[in-house]
Each structure stands twice: as structure tokens, then as C-alpha cells.
Amino acid sequence: MFKRTTRLIIPLLILLLLLSSLNFAIASNDNTIQKEEENAEEEIRIEPEVLHSDISEKDLKIFILDKMVAGNAFVSVKDFTLNSNVDGNLFVVASNANILSDVSYSSTAIDKNGNPVVEQITSNTCVAGSVYVVANKFVLGPGCIIEDDLYVIADEVEIHSYSSIRGNLFIVANKTTFNGILARSLYGHIKTFKMESMKTRIRPLLYR
Image (cartoon, one colour):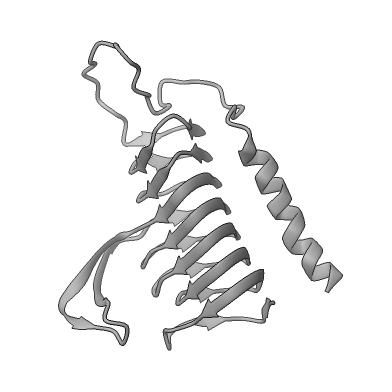
């Protein structure tokens, strides 16, 4: 048990240390997402489709990252949504954190909980590294892929069907709903844990 607890707690402590500071050590560059300044003149600019560096964002209430990041992403905002690819690791502190793919839902079919059934996944959102999240609520939507580990501290966690975590899942949460695919193991302290989908696959389940 000590080995399991240590394996869970140490990465989460590292996560808190990394994300508690708002001064991310990233050099500014032309591809860094621009921030709005009071009384600044309005600029007309063409945003690049790919950000060829690490990025950080800590000043916006709502931040939607819809451009590919060829590096790591560091985010500390109120509401965050990722619907593009990150080639490195993703670090997030937010009230609401969402990783979503481009998905369409059936207008007629519903699941047993009354939710619309996924009809088509147009494009997958993928994080090539690990994802570290501290949030009130975290959602990993259908079609999303995390190539390495997922670390989460949250009140509520939703991991939807057709999503995939190809490493381990480390989680501390009051409520977790897991309907995705987990390639390795789950380590965590979870008060309420539910699996609703028959397509869910989890290898050795280690939580209490």
C-alpha cells in the first residue's frame, strides 16, 4: 500500500508545486498567445495555426486553446477548453477544465442515462505527453486521447466513452465517472466511482 500511495502522492505534489506559481518559466515569443490589455489599441493580426513553442496563459477568465501546440502548455484560468493537439505535456489549474474533440451526437438515440449517443467523431484531440489537472470539474470528452499519464485533483471527474488514456491514471476526487479506455492502471482516492459503459476497459484497478 505504501508503494501505491507514494506512487500517487509524489506526482501530485510535483503537480501542485509546478502549478501553484503563476510565473511559468517560459520565454516570450511571437507565437505566445496574446493577452488583452486595458486601453490598448485594437490590433489586426493573423494567428498561426501551429504554435512552435511552449505556451502559457494565466490572465484570461475563459481560454479556448484551438491551435496545435508544438511544445508544452501551461494554463491557469477560470474556464479552460482544449480542442486541438498538444505535442508535449499539458498543465492546467482551472475551475472547469475540458479536453474535447470535434464530435456530433445523434438527434434521436439516447443512452440509458438519457444522454445523446455519439454519432461521429470528426477529429480527435490528442495530448502526446502527460496531462496534469487541478480543477473543480474535469471532463475528458469522447474521442480524446492522452498518450501518457493523466494526473487529476478535482471535485468531479468525467471521462467519457470513446476517450483513451494510454498510460496510468492518478486521481484524487469526490466523484468520478469513467467510461473510457485505460491502458494501464488506476491509482487514486475516490469517494464515489461509477462505470456506466459496457465498452469501458480498465486494467488492474487500484483505488480506495
